[in-house]
Each structure stands twice: as structure tokens, then as C-alpha cells.
Length: 472
Ligand SMILES: Cc1cc2nc3c(=O)[nH]c(=O)nc-3n(C[C@H](O)[C@H](O)[C@H](O)COP(=O)(O)OP(=O)(O)OC[C@H]3O[C@@H](n4cnc5c(N)ncnc54)[C@H](O)[C@@H]3O)c2cc1C
Image (cartoon, rainbow, N blue to C red; front, side):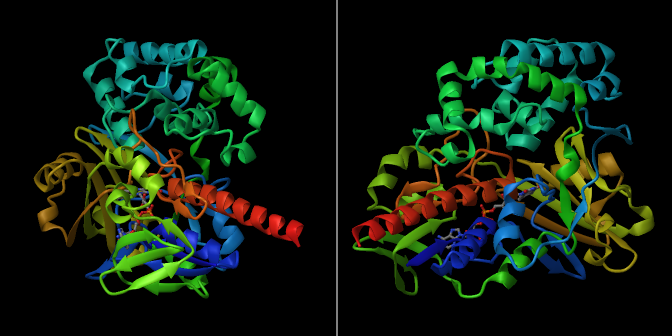
């Protein structure tokens, strides 16, 4: 059975590796550079990642599960450290637990009481799925700094401002609510029957039935005891890490594990369904029995024009919202490094996320130099330079090294009303990537979608094998 994997980012590579190991013949198409956003570039003695990265859910998440099962090599992750807010040139822990909120110096005392009371309130009474972070905070009469804090955290978790970020994303991101409680509703919105999907294998079908019949608000309300206990105990960042050798080392582990996958550096311009599928590139056409599409699914209506299931999804696919990011990387003398700790920090005006990757691995910069990355959402280079000067007192134009990256971090931002395509389009056409699963973010989200794709695809393959045996 021959599978065509379109796109060689982390989701395409994980798909190729797992399918190869499951006995499929794989041909992978990449129009640009293998690794996609999960990649690093070597420039002037520095090694920069595409964007500032933290890899989440390392102990119990989908990336680790897939790599442990299928990869010959595993990245060597270093503990990620803390998350901080930089204010008036001081670092403060980002508040997550009840105690953090009550003791944080970043917001006025009055706001602490209002926020913590509201969080407990929302957990006890429940809230609707389309309630935004802003819908809640605007009712509290918070100070400007607290509003900016919520806006920044929203950008960080969903790629969108607080007006467009669902409250559930904030609560799952903070670790108060398990994502599985929310997932049945998201799939239902995407016109997928969660009872028929892979969810039935991961979550007890009776539980899904009960969740859906209760509705969103009551599901939250019924979980309140657990959520409140999570809120009170806190401490959820224990499973994050950064790989030695940079983000590229994750891609390298997979690339070096591939044995039979054929890689074609060609852009896929058409996929047509005939007896099997015909994948067309500018150079040639290829027959495959199955397709796994890991490029942005909003491009599918133009690429896979004659596939009925895609036509039906066309409006949803074309309306998928995404966010643009800008990352400024700069190198400075190690002794002048203002981020000389393990972890990362956010700035709230404008929202930004900064990290020094040589704190994890000195080999990513020339000897004696520190390499810092700062990622912004929807900002110009000028605005980004001004923010770096304001927060770190560094004129990046005079830095030892300067490199700018523009990228779309996720193929779908996690905003209100967002459509996520379910990985199984039909028995022989699958979609993976960050627009094919609403859980978590980035690389972890991409890996989740690959797990769902695999499970659906292998389930069908097993059924076919079973039928075959019965007929024999
Ligand atoms: C600033 C920034 C910060 C980030 N921070 C984090 C973080 O902290 N943690 C985290 O987990 N993730 C983070 N990410 C996101 C993460 O890197 C990506 O979400 C993830 O790598 C996406 O993987 P993917 O395979 O789904 O998509 P991509 O990496 O986009 O791969 C898709 C591939 O398909 C190829 N392609 C597209 N069209 C075609 C075509 N027609 N034919 C052939 N090939 C095609 C593309 O060239 C690309 O290589 C960040 C990203 C950025 C930019």
C-alpha cells in the first residue's frame, strides 16, 4: 500500500515515520525545507530555531509517545524552567495557582481578589463554550495592567487577542480543565460525530455520551470540584523542555530514523481521485493508494478539487483563521545577557515572548556569546526593535548578530468559532497538522493529530484485514 505524505514539517515527518514502521510504502513531498517550522538555521556561527520554542507535555504527551514507539533516536530534552513576566526590569513568576495569583506583585491587590473569586465562580457555575476571555474580564473593572496581562496570555495560548480567545483555552492552557472534557464539543462543532471517532477509544464512549448530553456549561459545572482542586494546587509546567541541539534535533531524530521513505523536494499542486490518487507536482505525477495531507488544509480546496469530501468542507477550510508572527534573534556577549536564567519571559506591552536558547545549549552560539529570541504577534520590525530596547535596553541594530523571521506558527489559531478539520476525510484521505486538532499547541498539537490519523487509518486497515480473513 503506497501512501503520499504532502508536507515535510513535524506532522508530515511523524506520519511518514509511523506509517513506514507500520508497513506502508511512503513517498513524502516537501516544497521547501524538511522540518517546516520544526527546524533551525545556521547563520554566522549561530543556530536559530524558527521561532522561540518550548515543547509541552513531554512526560505524557503525543510527541513522546510517537517517538518512543517509532523512532530509533530520541531528542535529549533539558527541563524548560519557569515562565516569568518582566515588569520594570524585574522578573515575576506567571500566576497560575490560587496562591500565585494572591501573591503576585504584577497586578494590584484589588484585582487579585476579583480575579481569583471569578475563576472559582466560573468553575462552580460553568460557562458557555463561546465565552471569550474578554467577555469575563471586562465585567470585573480591572486595572489596565491586568487587562494587558490577560491579552498577552491569550496571544500566547491561542495566537489571538482576548476578545477572540475562548475562555476554555485559558483554562485548559492553565491546566485547570483537562482538554478531553472540551474535545467532544469541538469535534461536534466541526460536524464530526465524536462517538464514531477515535475519541471513543481514548475516552470511554459512555463518558462522551454523557458529556454531550449534559452540554458544555454543565460539564464544566460538574467538573468543578476537580478543577478547583487543580487551581488550588497549581504546578503544571513540569513536563516541558527544550532539546539539546535546538529544535532541529527533533526533526533530525525522525529523519535519521526513516529507512524506506522516499523524499521528493517538489510542491504538490494537485491531488486527484481516480482509481487511486494521483498527486501532481510541477515536475511529475505519482500514483498512491492513500494521502496524508500535512500542508495547511486551507489550501486543500485548490489542490484537491475533485474530492467530494473536500468540496463539502470548502467553506470551512477557506475560513480557517491563522496568526502571523515575527521573531527577532540577536546575539550578544554572554556577560551582558539579561536573560541569564533557565526559562522564558513574557512582556505585556506589546505582547511578546523572549528566551535565551544558549542557556540550554551553549553550542548554539559562538564561544562567549548568548543567543536570544523574541517572538511577537502582528508587529512590525520597528515595533519589535522598540520593545526590545524598552524591556532589555538593547539596541539590536548594534548587536553582534541579528536575524528576523516571519512565520505562521500554527495552521489554525485556537480562536472562537474556529473550524478544526478532523484527520479522517475518508478511508484513504487524511489530514494532519495544527489545523487538525484543537488540543495543546504547536508541535504537541501536530503530534496529537498524527495519533488520531494513525489510529483511524490502522483501525480501517485492521478491519479490512479481518474481513479478508473471514472471506477466506
Ligand atoms: C514564532 C513561533 C513560535 C513557536 N513556538 C512553539 C512552541 O513553543 N512550542 C511548540 O510546540 N510549537 C511552537 N511553534 C509552532 C510549531 O513549530 C509548529 O506548529 C509545528 O512545527 C507545525 O508543524 P506542521 O507539520 O503541522 O506544519 P509545518 O511545519 O508548517 O509543515 C508544513 C510543511 O508543508 C510544506 N508544504 C506546504 N504546502 C506544500 C505543498 N503544496 N507541497 C509540498 N509541501 C508543502 C511546507 O513547506 C512545510 O514544510 C512555534 C512557531 C513559531 C513560528
